[in-house]
Image (cartoon, rainbow, N blue to C red; front, top):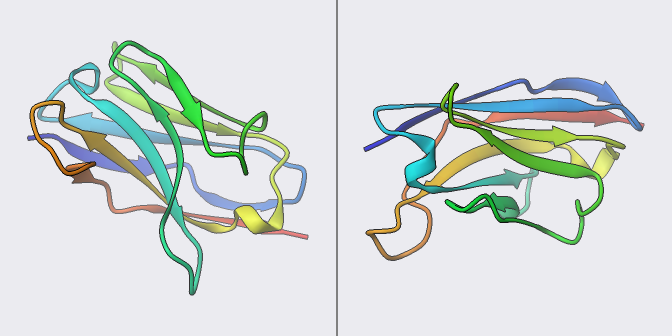
Length: 119
């Protein structure tokens, strides 16, 4: 089992940047596909980005070209670099791990970090 802790959220003006970190413990991040999700007030949680075990990355259309997901196995950490932020990016951002030996989607979740983008 892996434990995930996000950090790096905060308040930023539109057009600015933030880098979120997701530090894993208990297991190695390279054992999982890792994803970032977000949930804005009053909205469903939505998928943002994914990095597979083979480092293949995919993105939601809303963030493609602005966000970059990456993984540093030496630090057991997954990052989400967010550039050109927009007010509609405001949400709680969650890191999640998808265990390849279990079915049913992402299996482990962090507690979330708040990102607020002011206009």
